[in-house]
Amino acid sequence: MLTYHTAIIGAGASGLFCAGSFSRSKIILDHNPRPGVKVKISGGGKCNFTNRNVTACDYDSQNKHFCKSALAAFGPQHFVGLLQHAHIPYEERTHGQLFAKSAQDIVDFLVQRAKAAHTDIALNTQVLDVTPGTDGFLIRTSTGTIRAEQVVLACGGLSYPALGASSLGPQLARKLNLNLIAQRPALCGLSWPKQLRPLCKLLAGNSTLAQVKTGKHSFTEQLLFTHEGISGPAVLPVSLFYKEGESVTVNFLPGTSVRELFSVHKNTTRKMSAVLPLPGKMAGVLLGVLDKPLANATKSELESAIRQLEQFTFIPAGTAGYTRAEVTAGGIDTRQINPSTFEVKTIPGLFVIGELLDVTGRLGGYNLQWAWSSGWCAAQALAKKI
Ligand SMILES: Cc1cc2nc3c(=O)[nH]c(=O)nc-3n(C[C@H](O)[C@H](O)[C@H](O)COP(=O)(O)OP(=O)(O)OC[C@H]3O[C@@H](n4cnc5c(N)ncnc54)[C@H](O)[C@@H]3O)c2cc1C
Image 1 (cartoon, protein in one colour):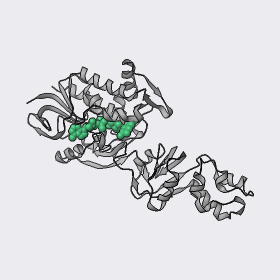
Image 2 (cartoon, helix red, strand yellow):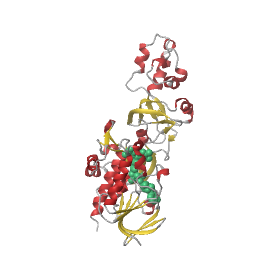
Image 3 (cartoon, helix red, strand yellow):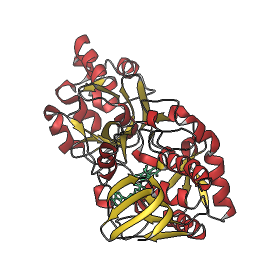
Image 4 (cartoon, protein in one colour):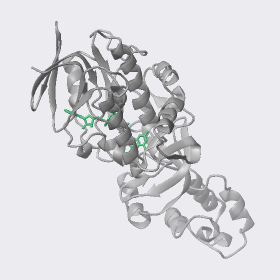
C-alpha cells in the first residue's frame, strides 16, 4: 500500500497552496481531471486572488475571532510577494481587489509550487472515505486505498457541483463526530417572491447602481435584474448575511433624493419616471401604476412612489442555490480546530482548511485569501510532524 507523510484531499486553492508550502512526501487526491478548476474560472477568468485590505470583519463565521491568527500569519502581502517573486502579472481594481492577468497563471503557479515541494497529484481519483487508525489514516479512493500519517481535508464546499464540489466534507464531518454549522449557498443572487416575478420579464438584463440592505448589512454597487430576481455586486454580499424569511430593501437611487427631484418638477406634465436618472424603462416598470404626470399626483401617490424607489422591500423566495453560489457559508465548526495549526483538536494528524470550514469571506478576493492563509498555517504545522 502506498504510504505518504501527508495526504491532501482536494486539489483546489487551499489544497494546492498547502502542498506547495512544506516539503514532505505527500499526495493530493482529486476527482477532477484537472487541478485548480475553481481557481481557473474565478474572477471571470482573471482570479481575484486577494484584497489589499483583509481583516476578520470581512468574514462571516460563528466564531468571529478564529480567522485572525491565520490572516496575521499569512496575509495578502505574503501572497503578493510570492507572485512578484514568480513574475506573475496582476492588477489592482476598485476596493483593493487584486486580479491576475489570467487565472491560468495562478493555477500554473500553484501546481508548479506543489510539485517542487515533493507532491504527487492524483487526479480522476474520488475519495470515498477516511478512517483514522493507530498508525495514521486509511484513505479509500476510487482507485485503491492509501495510507498517510496526516490527512488534510481541503475538499471545499457544496457550491458549483459541476466543477467538482461534493458532499464529502459534511459526510466525513458526521463520521468523525465533527460539528457542522448548517451550510447554505452564499455570494449568489436572490430570487423574487411570486408576486414580483412579472418584473423579471420586463427588467432582466438591466443593471443600475443600487443600495441593497438586509439586517445591519448594506452594500452599494451595481444591481443586475435576472430572470429570477436580482444579482450583481450589490446583491452577492447581501446573500451572505441574508436569513430565510427576512426582508431585503433596495434603494434604486442611492445618493439622489427622489423627493427633491419630484419637487423640482412638481408643476410639470412630465411623468414621474421621466425625471428619474434610472436607465431605460426601469423607472416606469418599477413605478407601474404609480407612474403619472407629476402635476396630477396626490401627496400620498408621491409618497408611495418615493417609497417604491428608495425603500423597495421584499422577502426573497430564496437564493439562486448551489449551482450558482460562489461559495458555501457554514461548514466545519472552527471551535474544534486549532486556529494556528488547523489541526482538529480531538483527532491529532487531521487538518481542515479552506472553504470547508465555517469561515466565509465577502466578495472581493477574501475567500481565496482564506484558502491561502489556512493552507499556509496547516503547512507550517505539517512540516514539523515527524
Ligand atoms: C464561479 C466562482 C468564482 C469565484 N471567484 C472568486 C474570486 O475571484 N475570488 C475569491 O476570493 N473567491 C472566488 N471564488 C471562491 C473560491 O474559488 C473558493 O472559495 C476557493 O476555491 C475555495 O478553496 P478550497 O480549496 O477550499 O476549495 P476548492 O477550490 O473548491 O477545492 C476543493 C477540491 O476538492 C475536490 N473534491 C471534492 N470532493 C472530492 C472527493 N470526494 N474526492 C476527491 N476530490 C474531491 C474538488 O474537485 C475540488 O478540486 C469563486 C467561486 C466560484 C464558484
